[in-house]
Image (cartoon, rainbow, N blue to C red; front, side, top):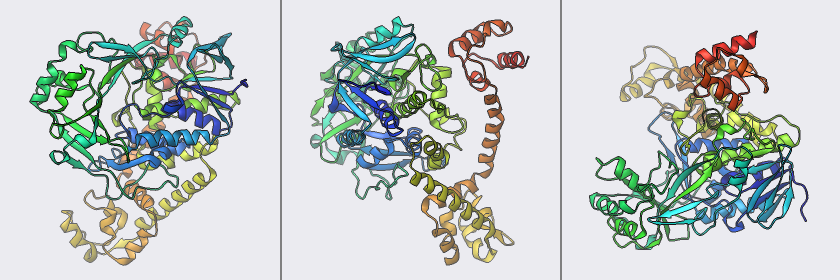
Length: 620
């Protein structure tokens, strides 16, 4: 009935879809196993992609040849570039998406691949022979063989849903939990833990009074995620903002004695930076109100996602509190919010390829590794799919450095530092964030994507042409000079010092008050010089000139620290022989088994003194 597959992907969420798409497009024969074919790529939480640091990840996925950016563009109903008032390292794209269309577009994309087969059933066991994963066993007892397995189980492993004092098994609303896998993996020696996440109630948009809320429009000139030929939006749907108040808080407090979180029934840790509304009221008691984002679920549905009101309080408490929010006085609830607990496996049990250390050819990606968020899951799925394919076909693994991508930062953090609470990406986690901007992801990563067989030749040629255009425009701005009589009035208007002699356009651009758009107003010749290049090229040239010293400083730091990555550590290195290592350092080095001294330097608990001892010993 079944052939032997190159890759079996268990779970069809954001991680599973990216893993299956990547491996299949690189040439592997893939089986995607899901408990429900109708919920492929389900947006279980809010109907949006991107945001601060997350938008950078989606751009990186796209630059490498992944699908999340394309699917997001095809299903978006609103686009916003966040943090434009800050420096370019902080600019972050975000789309509001049509939930149903997002899932449909993913399924259509996967079904178009001749290399992907599908099977709808629960996986109860991984078949392991001599320490190697060789297949899966389903709930019906069917055994399917493969050369590698990728687990992307999301919140389904022994999932437990909480609403007030009610608890019941489930991996998502109205879907059953996955049982058996955790128990088997722990018998193989894996350590597991529990985490918690939550979701807010959904309401009927027809029952809301938007006149009492603040309208949140999309960008006037909407951009998009993908560097491919997806189309930007011509019309957009508005989101809305409202606020809780003292009456809402007092009503919610009435349910605290029945809260599964406060009464200790929930054991798993929840996301620190996306707390439930009851947690916000408890932790930030001094605040009189909290922001609520009213987000439409799609073009043709009345369902509304109440972002900022995640809760596991009893449904009657939820409803009464909702109706006290301005604009929600007559709200009709579709379903209450809930919390969900699930099993995860601390990611320090993985190699940098996301292959497990205990079982060869077994990969973990997504929430099973302790992360939260569609984007974090998708990029892990992409890398797991790439590396599973590469190993099966005896190719070099793809490991992205911290200086190359936010994806590299995320995987490095997980494997070397681990996480005890749901891991979410922030710009502050990246020490090279001026290099890892959302606008230059294609320049950083498309060549890598092309080399491994994911990014097309058309894309790669477009990136090469873009690099040439950026170089040309930068040179033109450096060599084109303007007379004081032309520029000084603009400088005075911008509160910038006037000049006494001719100066190049690039020198003027280094001034924080002066933009390329302003310089284009000086003369038709300057306007024509700049406008013969695309908007993206203009943006790149301006950023490179304005932030040249910062970019150069980070690149020098990267080169300095990259030296540590050249010191390889043998997989069978005996740390017990290095007596001068601290006990904590020795224990963590033995458990994580870093591949380089650079990786060892980023392990929590390995001190600079330990590194010095290690490098001296290796030198001997």
